Each structure stands twice: as structure tokens, then as C-alpha cells.
Image 1 (cartoon, rainbow, N blue to C red):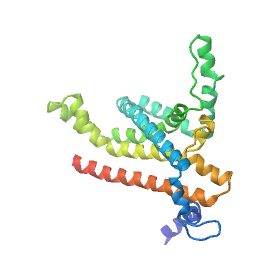
Image 2: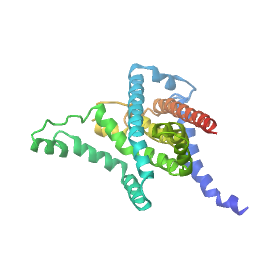
Image 3: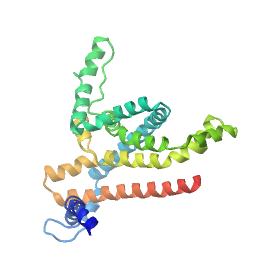
Image 4: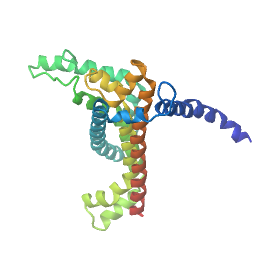
Length: 270
């Protein structure tokens, strides 16, 4: 009985901030302004403007996820091979940016990248060409990678650090070289952390609108920007909710693929 009572705050929190908002999104997304049932809000994703925004968001989020993975994997392996004190300090360095407000971190990059910003001022002093990537997809990808890289590093690190060193040493004793040990032992065992990191980076990258709004200068519209505008500027909650449902379907598809791949990876390592 006491355990059930202790779970009541969590149930209340989940109901108020997860279930109720989701029900509202589905209600508005599947109805028109008169309250009649319709699929028009969901099918609106097929229009040229919305499909272009969705494709741009998918493209940039995939690119950002791949870059985060390529950067995070060697970083996580380096952290695992260091001693405990250095290891803890370096992990703390990756966690510290997450304690800072997301909006402030993005605004800091705007200050760095703008035409009269810090980076171009330094390049001007050194008589080097200026860096003109603000308000371009490159700036958006840079902002995504910077903000979401820790979400890729930490799951990979948590998995890699738990791999039994005796298993790796046994592979070397049996004649495997470094590449073979990585491909046959380390990489398969790290798949759960890699898939978790991919999901944790891809989902916020796909749905973000703050990064593209600040670093893209509102010139590059992602699907997150379109949804945000429908809610805050045009006041069309029905269309905004319908597009949100489409976005949720992509997220659910990504999570299902991750779970299936994770199970297949575990089966192959057994």
C-alpha cells in the first residue's frame, strides 16, 4: 500500500505533463476548427512547403547524428583507456555544458559565428578569409553537434567502460589484431550504447527549432520551425498538432528500428 502511495506523485506528473498534452495534440491534430474529425492536418505534410521543411529537418538531423557518432566513438574509447582520476575529470568536462541553458549555448555560437563576431574578428587580425557560415545549414549542423554531442558520448562511454578487459585480452591472446578485436568484440558489445546515443541525438535534432531559428536566421525552415510558427504566430493549433503527429511517427519509427537492431545485435554477440 505504501509503495502505491509513493508512486502517486509520479502518476500525477505523468498524467499532467505527458498524457494530457499528448491527448490534446491528437485531439487538435485530428479535428478542424469546428471540431469535426479530419485527416487534413496530417495530410498537410504533403504540401510543398511542409514536405521541404520535413526533408530539410531529416537531412540535417541525420548529418548531425552521423558527425556526433564519428566524434563520440573515439572520444568514448579514449576516456575508457585513461586512469580513473583523469577519466572522471574529462567526463565532467563533457557534462558541464549540459548544465548551461540550451538557449544561452546557442546564442553564444551566434555571437561567435556572425560576420562581425569573435571568430571573424580573430581571422581579420590574422589576415585570413572570414568565415561566413551564419544563417546557413552548416551553422545549424554545427549548433546541433555542439548541443547534442554529450548525448552520444555518455551512452557510448557507459557501455564501453563496462566491457570486461579480460575478454579483450583473450582476443589478443588468441591471435586477433587490433582491428579484428574492435570489429568482433568491442563494436558488437558497444551497439546498445551506440543505438541509444543515435536515438538521443536524432530525436532532438529532428524536432529542434531554436537552433535553426538562431543560427539559421529564420531563413532555413525546418519542420520544427513550421510547427512552432503554427502555434505561436498563426494560431492554427490544428495544423500544428497534425504536423506534430507526423513528426511523432518518424520518432516512433526510429525507436522501433533501434530496438529491433539492438535485439539482433545482442543475439549475434551471444
